[in-house]
Amino acid sequence: MTELIRLQKFLADSGVCSRRFAEKLIEEGRVTVGGKRAAIGDKVSPDTTGVRVDGQQIFPRRKENSYIMLYKPRGYVTTAKDELGRKCVTDLVKKERARLYPVGRLDRDSEGLLIMTNDGELANKLMHPKNHIPKTYRAIVRGKVSGDALGALSGGVYLAELDYTTAPADVELHEQKEDRTVLLITIYEGKNRQIRRMCEALGLEVLRLKRERIGRLSIGTLNSGQYRKLTEKEVNYLKTL
View 1 (cartoon, rainbow, N blue to C red):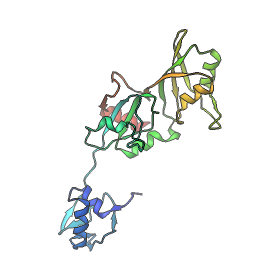
View 2: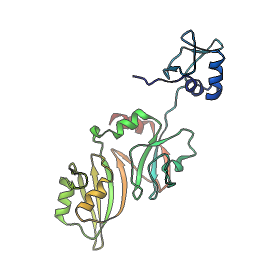
View 3: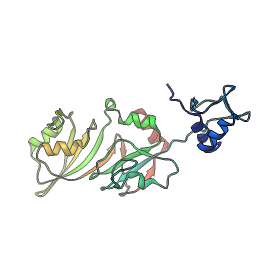
């Protein structure tokens, strides 16, 4: 069911006037809804075509959805606004006309692929746990990682603080040296700080964590802090997930 919005917001969103002036128009009796004089407090569907001002029909303005891929740097939080004054990912996309919101989250110390959009329907779909959308991370951990630890990461790790065992993951040993190991880990769920918690539970210290892929979408050649618009093909792909 479509959520109703206040009449003055509808008028403002349709480009008629500001919300404050819209209230004045309503108070003066110049606005009708469905042929009846409107009153302050009335609500309408965002898609209604039954609103008139001074007898002139007002049509809803269609919102143009925007979709971008951002390389989130370390040190930024994935919120639109932070009460602690920390740097937010929205600070990096201020040049965009649309007000964009992050889809899902990457913790402050992690980096990599983050999708941002004003398409609430798609955002909710991508974040819903039931869809099990694969996300691939490049994790650099201190020292060598044993075969037992690799097996545990793949099979599921019990997280005591959540009283929860993670779902099986795909784990690839990408590189191993005396002082560090590089792992590619693909998870199909989205618990908060999941990979860091999985590693901590196994006594592994994460030195760096970067999300490289969401489904088939890859961070590609973007550098930290850069972003680009998604292609129509990429958007349509996300809508099929």
